[in-house]
Image (cartoon, rainbow, N blue to C red; front, side, top):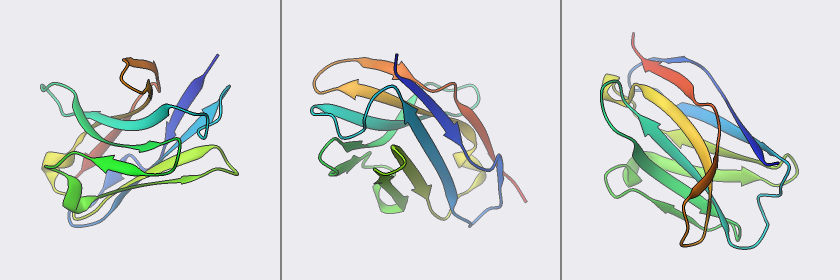
Length: 119
């Protein structure tokens, strides 16, 4: 059973960098054909895909967030991380990490973590 767990600060000040980690158990983040994603849901809105890091280590990002987003990984910890720079209150959301099989649906999700951007 694959499990994902998000961690990181729940409060970030405007203009700072939001940093979250997703620790994976029950499966390796380097296993072929799996992509490891970040998704968020602002209050009262739908899910928004942020980006992913592939099993190979390459990345892809939402065009609307690409200039501020970086996703990396630490294979020794079986963990991948999100950094979102220059945050504003509009980045307030529940942030989820999830796994997707290439060309398939998201099959495992973390429980989500609330991040609020406020001074």
